[in-house]
Picture 1 (spheres, rainbow, N blue to C red):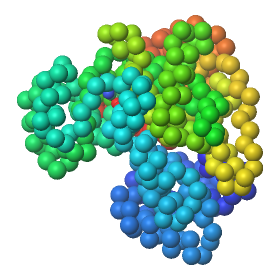
Picture 2 (spheres, rainbow, N blue to C red; picture 1 turned 90 degrees about the vertical axis):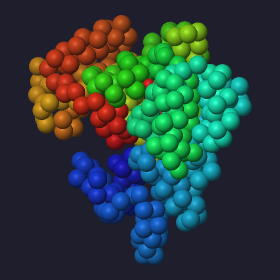
Picture 3 (cartoon, protein in one colour; picture 1 turned 30 degrees about the vertical axis):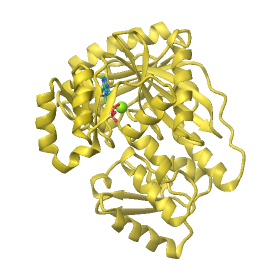
Length: 386
Ligand SMILES: Nc1ncnc2c1ncn2[C@@H]1O[C@H](COP(=O)(O)OP(=O)(O)O)[C@@H](O)[C@H]1O
Ligand SMILES: [Mg+2]
């Protein structure tokens, strides 16, 4: 994103907070680097950015992670800049809003209840069998999600949450495969979409550690058209006009049907954008910037013609800060993930069966060679959109 902006001739200002100031930012593409103590104090950030705007024109503000999406929407509205505003942002940030709007559009979703009225909650727990997932409405990366097995556990957890509880929803736990569709949207139309399946549900990877993987589905897979169709209906129901989306779905064991899990109006984390770039030539970060620029300048935006290779990401937390992966030598390795205490690869092949076999083999090998188990610190969070 930052490199695309620089290449388009923009002056690039990167604002980050203390927790991320030492990340491997592409300094060659950054004209000004601003560190604010924390993104959590919105008023301080608004003061800083409007102060910066006194001496220079700021035309676009783009978030780089789920956690800055709300702040950027507030800044855009305050400064009257183009891009997603606060109310549309909520459709993609708030899991309760997502549930309501998609259910209203006839899209299958897990049965859910807002933690608000206790009679309504008792009715819900009386009619929908446990286990249930208690979820914060606005977190990401499986953080804060709890699986609860009876109503007593729910009441006790709500007691502990106190005034925070109305920021949660409860929904039925639907065991099954978790799939995701990553798409590019222009004028309300999906102009690019790719469907993938996580090797294990992200909740499991997050809590038990182990090797994370996601693999593009075979385009002949009968689930492919169903996923693209449901993705399109979700994007329509929530009202995204221009941008990128990362939507997740569960294929439930109980009936084999697809259910909408959640969607974010951003690039998928965990190196999914790199995988798409290497396999198809479409990079959601680049496309998103292209769409924002075309909105700003009124110029047409052109999606590259996608290639049809298949891609996968295999990633694990590692015991060593800089694990040596040089003994992994298959030609399908297009990228070695270079991040402290991680080992991982992006793999690409025109042959889907070959890719699936390689992923299975790598998962076993990598677990032996590198994996460090740190439950609750799974790769999902660390890979989030960066
Ligand atoms: N209703 C559900 N049934 C089964 N698994 C779920 C359900 N909700 C969430 N999960 C599991 O928890 C993970 C994280 O939930 P999700 O709603 O995607 O939130 P996050 O924003 O944290 O990714 C999912 O990828 C899935 O593994
Ligand atoms: Mg998710």
